[in-house]
Image 1: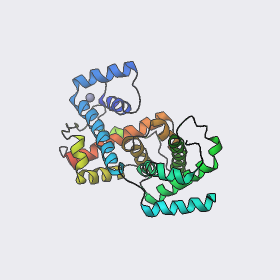
Image 2: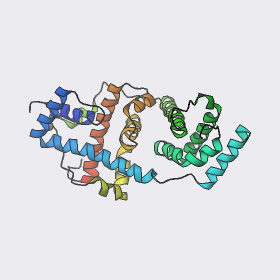
Image 3: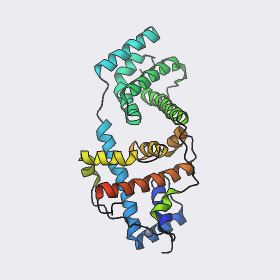
Image 4: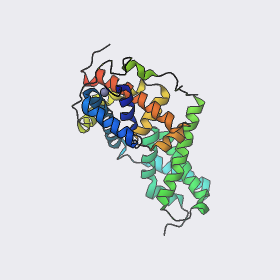
Amino acid sequence: MKHACKEISRLASNSLDRKLKLWEKVKFHVHLAMCSNCRNCDNSMKLIREASELIQKTKYGNIRLSNVQREKMHRTLKESTGG
Amino acid sequence: MNSKSDPHQWLSEHGDYLYRYAMSRLHNEELASDMLQETLLAGWKGFDKFAGQSSIRTWLVGILKHKIIDHIRKEIRNRNLTEAVENDPTSAYFNENGSWSEAPSAWKDNPEDLCQSEQFHAVLDSCISKLPEKQQIIFRMRDITGEDSETVCKSCDITSTHLHVLLHRARLALRKCLEWNWFGQGTRP
Ligand SMILES: [Zn+2]
C-alpha cells in the first residue's frame, strides 16, 4: 500500500469536517479504490453520522414546551419585565 | 410589525422553536427552559441592539446560541476536561506499517433502519459513553447535533486542528465498538 491505512482513516474522518485539499483528495480516492478495508471504514463513519443525525431529528423534531413550562415562563417574564 | 419588544409574544411565537434548539443541544428539560427564559429576558433588555436586519427569531437564536456555547465552555472548564494530543490512541487499530490490525467489515445496514431500532440507540449510547468525556461532547455536538466546526471549537476552547484529531479518535473508537457490539462481524476481545 502506497499510503498507510492509518493516514487514510484520518482523511476519511477529516472529510466529514472540512474540504480536503486537492492532493489529499487524490491520495484518498486512489487508496480507496484499492483498499476495501478503508472503503469500509469510510462508509461506516458516514453511516454512524447519518444514523445519529436521523435519531436526533426523530428525538427532538417534534418536542414542544409543556403548558406548565410555558405558564411558568410567562409568570417569570411578567415579574422581571413588569409587563 | 415585529419591531416591538414583547417577550411574551416571542415566547408564544418562537418558544417551541427555541426550546427545540436548546433541547437538542443540552438534552435537559430544566436547563433548556432556563436558557430559553434567559434568552427572552436578554432579548428584552438588549432590544435596542436589534437592528431589524434579521428576523426576531434569527436574532433570538443568536442569543440562545451564545448562551449555550458559554454554558458548555464553563462545564468543560469546571470539570477540567483536557486531552493531550501527544499520545495517540489510534495506533492501537493499526500495525507498525500503518495497515489495519483488524480489518473493518462492510456494514450493510441503512440509517433509516438503524434509527428505528431502540436497541441500536442503546448500543450507540453505550459506545459513546465509553469515549473520553471531551470526545463525547465533541462527537455529540458535531455528528449528532450537526453543529458546525467553528461552534464546536468555540464551545470547547480548541483549535480546528485539535478538533480534527479528537474527532478522528472518537470515530475510530466508535466504529470499533459498534463493530463488536452491533454489526457483529468483528472478533470480540
Ligand atoms: Zn487502506
